[in-house]
Image 1: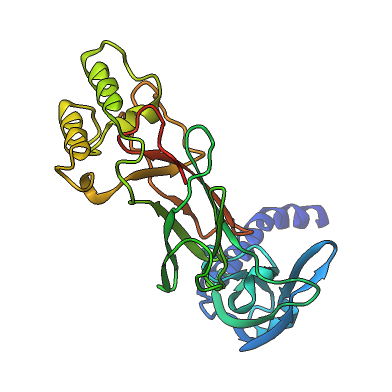
Image 2: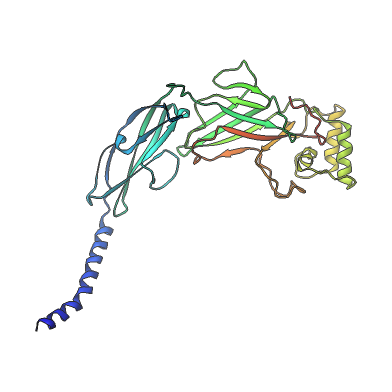
Length: 331
């Protein structure tokens, strides 16, 4: 009799387990109440020199005042604002000497039913301790022979996910505002500022130099470009071909020769678009060096907001428009 009862119970065990799992699933689905999360409005940190680095961290236990949920189990995550989307995987945020000022972090809470809540805290970062001052930006501009190009300016655009935008166009050379462009030696232009680059900002740098369009342009360049067009002596470098594209329409034609001739004769004061040089990221590799016009050539460096630590050194290659034998004086 006892064995019969056990056999009958075995028939219902899978059903009971199934009902229990279904109940748990239904309960999880019906839980739509997000966790209650309370964060500090502000928290102050000193950037200090430690272990050969100038950095400090903010952690969840410093920033979360209270968290609770009806399910009892809550997971927390932390990240710097505009450094990603969705639930953050980290529990700390790192700051360096470039971050002196006020920076915002996001704190997220998630319960077992995938309900979310979030809040923000402003981190006040004090610097200048143990030599932990903000770093300079540096931009390097070199021609195809790796000589530094002087007198270059750069336009900087910085923007983040909150719609904050910073635009800067700096002059070059010493004697300017020390909080902006500070020096320009051997093709390296240094910028000192406290706005960007910083975590959460996408940075776009567009260099330009538009003075002295006749620099390096002679009748010899006209002859070289003409030979290239006729197929008698093709230009053997993608940089030379880009220099020969005087009107920058993506091809080398007799119209480019005509424009250079007018420039040499003084019939026109500037090249098309007012540009004397064109720049590209030094790291750019031509997909087809024999035809540099086959794909777009970037004229800027874009550093995405997810870069951490933020880059503060940018290298560009400069090409003097119209100068196909690279005789332009870069300073």
